[in-house]
Length: 131
Image 1 (cartoon, rainbow, N blue to C red):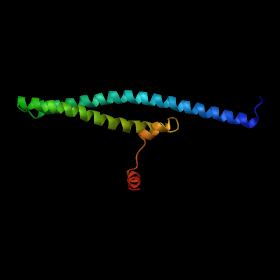
Image 2: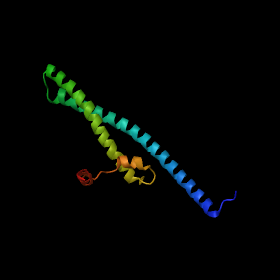
Image 3: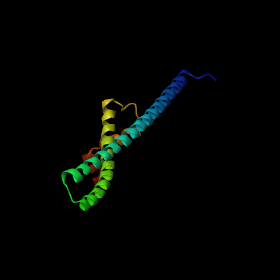
Image 4: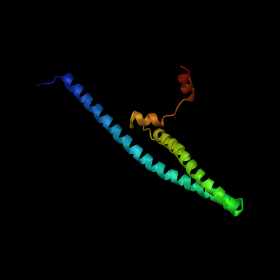
């Protein structure tokens, strides 16, 4: 079973494409793993920062009566948690976008990952919704 030269070239091209696809998939998994670890740590820092900020404001700055301070502190704890999660997600997405652009990872990551972190053109989205 001798292969012609064109068949060998085609097989070699397919092999290179498969290797490139696997490398992109591996790089994407590594990027997402590191990004997830960063997001967890960064979100926890934001939550703790908001918690400390609200605590200082309630107990040191405003000098509220004890009962009012306890109630406001309970609500501020919820706001710290939910706000910290929301801010954490926003910060993470911007940091991931920055890292992709700064280190030119567009050709090293899969299209699914790049699509998730791509900047969205709001005008184009509005035009697409009209159609």
